[in-house]
Image (cartoon, rainbow, N blue to C red; front, side, top):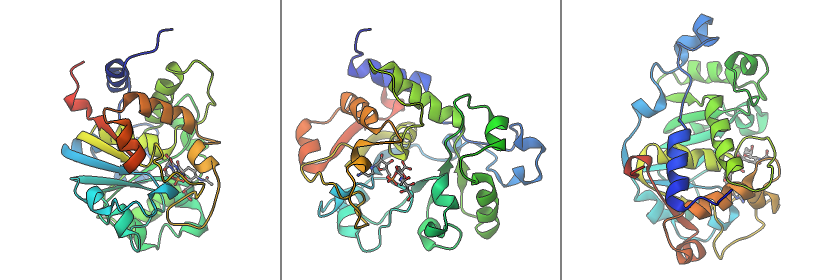
Length: 276
Ligand code: NCC
């Protein structure tokens, strides 16, 4: 199979992936009393379009990057899971427009999801590793973590904060793009929050800058910029097909290799800017 060119890869991603979120009309939710807590409309009709967006990975290599001002200069900023800004503004900025969280963060005591102020600003978007079928009823009956119980609790405490749940079809559509563009079979686990968030922002923004997803010259085994914990698997992947995601992002990058090396910055076009 011939390797796709950059424009072909970008158009394939645009054509074959839809950023879908749960709405109250979908089965099995439509027959459940709490379905009314779900946003009426999908995320993509409520948010954006934005001109410029920043996706801030949680990588340790953001430490001492001094990228904070540059990151905050974007119209929208996406952050992940428990990644804080307080105390790290110089390196990661302070604006949070959207926070993408996995269901483990919502469920584990350690993250105090229901009570910590970390989660209460901006728009929340949650996802849970669903069965490959992406069948909503199957998933509902056997989620990886109790995403729906926690969602309902959070909504009761913060009824005004926008909070979306990604449709599992989205995670597996993104996974399929990775697999179809790799020569080897990859593990059947969903893509990392980092890559899911990147594709999400490509559907909302005209241009997307992704920071320290492809590591810069600051590359380190420090897992997160906000924690003293070292593990190379955070950058290279274990459960998630992270190395393959990074390979694909490298192939789609419209910026220079120098930009990656010095700033850890990748430049991707928004889907609306592609002529496919
Ligand atoms: O670590 P995590 O991701 O929260 O990081 C967010 C995204 O940043 C990119 N990243 C991170 C660290 C690093 N050194 N290099 C990177 O490129 C990745 O794209 C990553 O997705 C997740 O994807 O949701 C993940 O979540 C953590 C964990 O659940 C949360 O941080 C909450 O504690 C996972 N860790 C564990 O399960 C132990 C991680 O595998 C993936």
